[in-house]
Image (cartoon, rainbow, N blue to C red; front, side):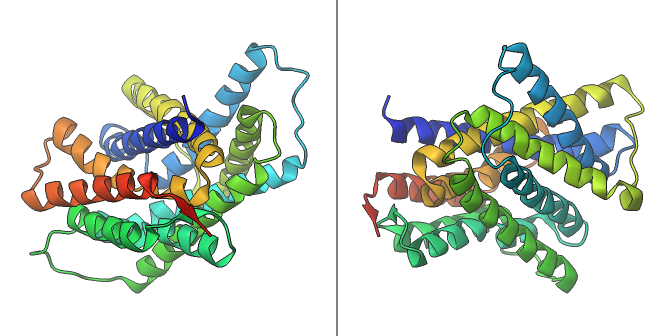
Length: 291
């Protein structure tokens, strides 16, 4: 299989699993005593140790220290910033408005790649706006009132910038790491340590039911460790610009999964928006590179 097509599959799988994580983060507070910021801490507290245990169980003990591990730990800190910004932004904004704001980050990645002379799809000037229009239709009902909390808006912008920085830095820092799984493990260690730094401020709780623990473990493994590994691999195969655009599938899949598992209604407008997003992604991936 060609490297490009494998990268597309990996990024699509990452977007699907990140969509599952969004569903889990909706369900967990309903089924447990955990608050959103507790889940933001728990997800990497679970993901990082399990990822390292799996890595060591495969007999990779001789390959534990990549070049510049502190860069990878810092990369985890960048992802942790985005993780906590999402929690606090959603506490102040509607989920639809949050999605519209935060998913400007693929556009930021493409813009930075264009300015810095990196490879980007030739039809970015069609595909990127089309993606944003599709996301708007998926996330925002046209007959809804648009209210804006300025602090929530600022936090969402920081979230978008942090995600754009993560994608770009992931492409750079993991490029020279031979074992991408090892590099991802160090990155998740950095995200876990960053979460622990805010424990004195936010505190922590444990799930009060067995179902809660199962859901939390699912969030750590299925909704965190696996998609981040797949995303890091996909970015290396496609580049930051192409890879970040595919991640815009995530909110579309969240709406679809919410319809299937949570009984939410899916309007014609959202169907149209989803088709636009998928069409834009296909257009960009079929487009040749330019500088």
